[in-house]
Structures are given as C-alpha cells and as structure tokens.
Image 1 (tube, helix red, strand yellow):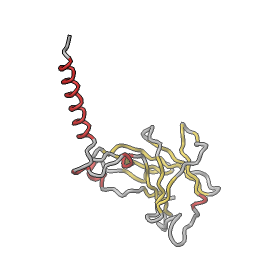
Image 2 (image 1 turned 180 degrees about the vertical axis):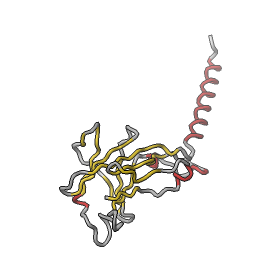
Image 3 (image 1 turned 120 degrees about the vertical axis):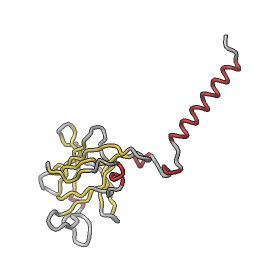
Image 4 (image 1 turned 90 degrees about the vertical axis):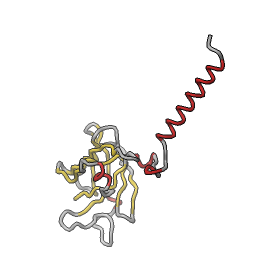
Length: 168
C-alpha cells in the first residue's frame, strides 16, 4: 500500500508540471503578446475591383454596385448553401470580412451581384505557424484563374496585406 503522503506529493508534482506547461503554451507576453483565439479565427477580407479601371465596386464616391445587390454563398459538396453567407463590412478600409468554412483545404464561395450569374471564388487555406498562429489564404482562384499566391516563406506571409483583391 502506498502511503497517503506519497500520493499527495505525486498530485502536487503533477499539478505543478501541468500548470507550468500550460503557462508556457498560453503565454501572452514577450514576442507573443496580444495573441487571441480571434486571431486564429478563419476569416478573409475581400476587396472587389473593376479589372480594367481598378475602381472599387462597392465603396467610394461612385460605386458601380450597391452592397444590397451582393449575395455570397458557400458551396458545399458541389451545391450552393441555401442560406446566404453573412459578412461584416469594414467601411474604413473598403473591405468585406467573410467567415470561412475551415473544414476542407479549400473554401468555395459563389458571388452574385443582382441577377448576374454567380461567379466562383476558391480560397485555399493553411495555418501560419508563427508566434500567434492564424489561418491564412495560401492561394485564391477566381473563375478558375489564379488571382493570389502566398509566398512559401512564413516571414513574407506574415507581411502580406490583410485582404484579397478580386477582379470582378
């Protein structure tokens, strides 16, 4: 039979080891200061522009389209989701902030303006494994044309702009 004092000692050592391990992993100081679960959240910022004039299609003094005409839907297993995708507007930076479905390596989004035929945007995702790990877009294809390719170097990836420009 193990004496009660030995069991207490083992529990104290175990709890101390666990506390030190968790404190090291969840440290929010030093170079990792400011990390949050929200930083890892799978979102993408999109900017829609006219490919010829480079004018923003939804923001600015004379936008070509009204945001009320924009419909975004995720494509699941080849079918359009029945519920439109919600997005947030960043009016200051002229961006649409869209939550990604991060279950697969690629997220396909159907973009429709008014009664136009939907156009497909495929976003390939990965994780940027730096101090504050986060989901990043590694590649983007619009209507089967490559519009964005992230550099392989994580240092360069961390310096990328916080949006993908879509030539609609």
